[in-house]
Length: 423
Image 1 (cartoon, rainbow, N blue to C red):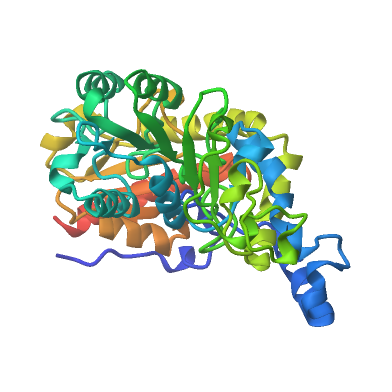
Image 2 (cartoon, rainbow, N blue to C red):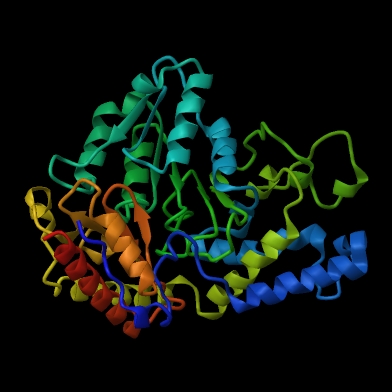
């Protein structure tokens, strides 16, 4: 088998970054804010908690993010908290809302949920004395399909609802890019007496959300994907105000009433709402890195104009990809034996965000790595998922039409070279 050749003159060209669904690019404002905090640390030391040259006292630094968080997820400010990490927050809220009984102990989720979610579910049911194989229902696509039909999810909830304690799906599925109908699934779950939560790691900053109006019980998210907070950035969570007063089983001093927090009282008094679930003081550098990006979202007008641009960019990418001689309709992908690709993300714009997942053919994992390498040499950065998928995600904040043209043109060139190398 011949090696895939790369044109030398392409290696030093401009980068086309379409991997914001995995790690968003740095906002210039984030860099400025982080540098200011380093200066404050150097010149004020511990006094920066209360005396800050830029008006961002560390004792209330997370509060700067809450109004923008609330706008992005469609919530009251008191319903959101900037804290922790996605999986830590997920465990925190599972410990609060997963309350299995003898008759109602199952968790309903999608098959191939992100591994952290799968691990969290398994460890939670095990901690309560249940077997994951009996307690976790994983919804799968129908044979020959790549995404899960809404009617199949709702039908399962109707049939199994009386034994389900918790329904928890990804808002946008990380592998396929499917945008689940959050409101309708939430309504169906709650009609059966289930609690309904959401992992919004790939949804926040990507698609419009109305968590309060949709009556979602709780949600968690990371911020380093579409929210561009930087690698390993701080997380966020949502708890609907209908749960105000819910006992906090894992209290920490940062969730204590701000008015008396530094008086160090013996008895915990929670901040009302989601912010009472805060535990430790957050990393200031992580918070301001996020804040710099959130301010860009705010200044851009929030999710409505960004969603409009995202629909156009993603639609243009899809249409351009379907003009490729290597594109194969998804219903033909399983039987296709030649070099090519199919798009497994829903074609309905309302059922996806900005991500398109391309599965490379023939299936089996031999084509995708060569394509990923070839694209990388040409400065086209996507995100791969073994064995066969490359995810391309045009960001409404920083990608443009020329970059999409360049990415598709380079993809065709790479596939031509891969095909030639295998003759």
